[in-house]
Amino acid sequence: MSTLYKKICCLVVLSFLTGCVPRPQKELKPGDKAIILTGKVFAFEEAEVASPISAPVEKILVEPGAQVKAGQILVRLDESGAKVDVARAEAALAIARATLTETRAGSSEAVRAEAEAEVERFSYELELQKTYSTPLALMTEHEQSGIMLQNAKAKVERMYALYARKLASRPEVESAQNEYADALRRHEGSREILERKVALKDSDARLAESRYKAARARLAAITAAASGSGRLQIALAQTRQAEVEVEKARQNLGQSIIKAPMAGVVTEVTAQVGNKIYEGRPVVKVSDIARVRVQADLSPGLLPFVKVGQKAKITVNSVPPATVDSSIATIKTVADPRTQSLEVTFILPNPGFKFQPGFTARVEVPVEPGAAKDLPGKEQKR
Image (cartoon, rainbow, N blue to C red; front, top):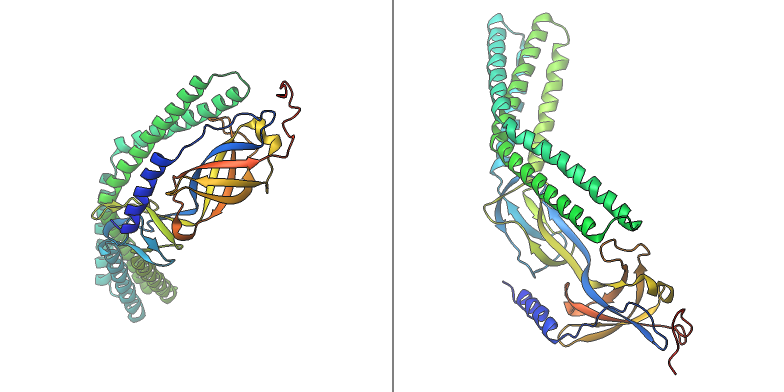
């Protein structure tokens, strides 16, 4: 574990021990000079780096807390699967080139009979791979979980709409949210199991399919040579296609090295050495914290007293606490259905990475003198 990451952990703990976080202000009272909010620090920008291919993790070159540059190598994947694909594509190319040679030289009945037998043999092998690659029960379970997930999502959206019209209670909304979360976990779990089952047979199935296609192409070229119709054009097209497949396989081999898309700090590593990571799954999260965002919840009743660009003072519970002048960057005018509050965002410079994601902050937004003087239903204190 790096020294920087240890310091970050210590700062997080100390900030909670030393920081005094106020309760969020719900309304503006006569005589109030500022709106006081509770905020939280977030990275200015985050990037989840996903695996471009499915392969076991060979080596992880970073850990949480490490500073990285754009283009820096983060993870190396096992190249053995990609190398097999390259070898398979090169073998198919060799067959295509041999077929082209046979087409140019003509062919005998014996060569054609051998090609037909080869097509039949590889066709049988491909059918076996397709039949036993994915159990039917797993596919059915995944499809059923997908239907349940759609139903749960529709129920959540319906409960949100009813809650907004005060026709449903908060417990009913929360119950629908829990049902949706359970359905999502079940669907994701069934998909992972199905993907693992498919991956076990994926390499053999692809190899069988490649052999079958190559054998068919060879037979087609031989048949064309015997008939004397378009034989050279077909063989040339098959050879060019095989060359494209070789180039594609070699490009995939180069994707076994995963690099940082931007400069920042590694905040999360989800991969583990030796475990297989599937294409599209996150491997590392990189956060840009040269600047940070402070997000605070604002009561809708306070919206008339704030606007974008309004000055504010942000006190972050770092060690020691630091106060920074800022201004309101954005205000979401649609309330969160869970918290019934509006999200207000501030942007802070962060030299030396003093402010870390997760730190709490005290937000003070001054209001114009007398802004709360004549609030409805309030008596001014004398």
